[in-house]
Image 1 (cartoon, rainbow, N blue to C red):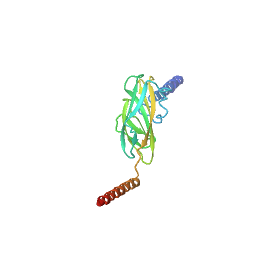
Image 2 (image 1 turned 180 degrees about the vertical axis):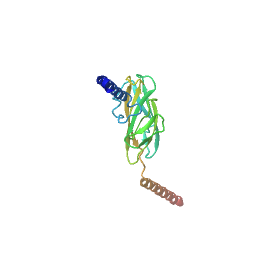
Image 3 (image 1 turned 90 degrees about the vertical axis):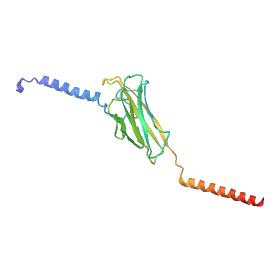
Image 4 (image 1 turned 135 degrees about the horizontal axis):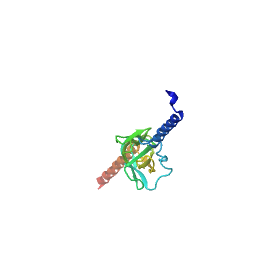
Amino acid sequence: MWRNVDMKKVLKLTSVFIFIVIFAGSVYAYGSGATGYSQTGCTCHSETADAGTTVSITGIPDQFTPGDTYLLTINVTSTTVSGNTGGFDLSVTGGTLSTTDPNAKIADGEATHKNNNARSWQVNWTAPTGVDSVTFYVAGLASSGSGVGGDAWAKTSYGVVVIPEFPRTTLLVVLAAVSIMVLFFARKKLIINSYL
């Protein structure tokens, strides 16, 4: 049975099959999310960011309260690439990310796209305790959806500081001082009124 098999043809077909599997895997490798790109950008799509593409996060507070949870929305817009397919990678230097968005997921402590069906995603961030500030890093991709190029990306970062806590001992000292002053002046007024 094997005598009539042309080994060159088998080798060629095997090589073509392996090439297709490898190439198809690299084209669609990040359609279900990618982490580790929030600071560097989507350089697997192109080496530089696109001036016509932006990524933004709304919902980040100017200052955060430790332990509070904030709803963040990541948006990718592009004048270069039309459509509504894309992806993102969000990391933060403190706190915890979570999501219930059907198009997003958490992987390796970062938030990323679950599929390429959107250019807007929602993520929850629970602020950390014991830190003074955090930095959010996000990279966003506007995808052509073709799988063979025509994509554009952008990246940005946001810094946020903790709302300073007014120490309780300081508050007690201030309240005590105000109370003493009120009593002192009230007593002075009583003494003055008794002489009149």
